[in-house]
Length: 276
Length: 308
Image (tube, rainbow over the protein chains, first blue to last red):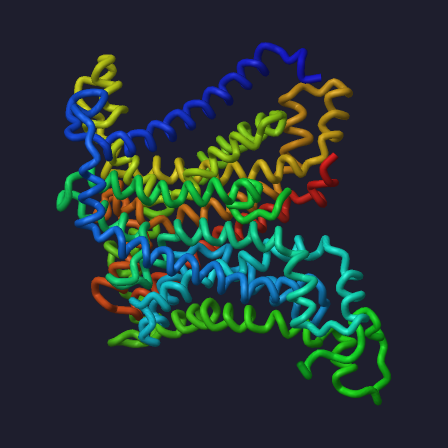
């Protein structure tokens, strides 16, 4: 019934697509500009650089200390992902399976860190971590990054657990399985697909989490994004191409994991929705 | 494990006599070993989210010198500080309106598309990459030697490179690039939640696209749009990296997050920094509450009757 649309409607549809195309074109051009520049020797008043080289990547490796940076990033991301799963999944199970007094309050408690932007609570959080002598350490960065990710795991896992038949667990209980055994033998295998997507989302979000890491990291506990921020901030100290090379390294790391994640997850879940 | 109760979960009786043991009575109210699994997460969020917020609130009223309100008095007496609220609103409000206004028509169109997944996948990329990378991309892409200025100069559209960086527009664009996809994905999830048979019915009764939008879709979308507006605004209001990297952090884009950051990490005045963070939260809360109240005025019942 949309076929016999009038001229006005078709013109409107066309302009909507035109806008979308324009946005995507600029998005791609923006990313392409970074990639091209990172391989360029010199780039002045031309469409493309004068020549191509990989020496900026060698420079990033040597001068930015890329290797330790990647190690710290991997440590932070791995720890956050595992801990968010360990704290979040059991909590999601309890929230999905039990009605208890204060459940609505608990749900609100888990919703808040996802609704309040990280920079707003990051400042008081960093203050508390400084008082506890944890800021500046990897431990502090991990703790700070767990604040939005634990609730995120809970809110992703709750609807997933809801749709699994509780009679399976009841049967296991009847046969004498206690809670730890129930988790190991029944629940973890059943929840595996949900856990996998929740943890992959946590992983991708933690690689890209700038604000909390920035506010709590010290020189030796920076992740890739924060180091990129400082590199761009101190532009002029290093050649622009080497900063773009650094950006490409960050982009590559993120996009590889994003691709892996999107094999299992609906893109809409990246913004924190659990589906329509 | 002793904490695991001897009875199977589903056999828990709903009404238990007063004389029953404590464990049985607790279980009847839903408190047993399984419920305790939520405890670590609750304690964690209390310790690292609620406590810091309350501590920050307390700290903001305990300045290094002066009375309890000294920080707030200083904030509202120095244009250098109180101007940041207006500066941030001047960025966040137009950006939010632009993003939502662009996202609604695109989402309504994409809803009819077969291969939505490709577009949503592509649009997830800028969200995942984050504002720091978008800022670096804009510096290369919009810079005086970038492709945009190359195009303008080579086609004679402008006789000198246009300045889109290190001013208001740089931050504005960065907020659109990372904010539009976010807004779009949120709106799309609300739009696809509207039962298509409602619109079909209107079309059968002869309603044109414009009437279908104004009379059917928009009223059903309003609750979702209020939440989208609130979330997009809150994100834009706490802008930091792009305001520094592609903005004018000492001038036109000295946003409130910069003031809070400088107080904390340049002057080491955590009390003042906490006060600014609390004001930031207060403005965000105020706008969100206002939006949700507006939503309450026009809300006409559940928006979705499930996907048809």
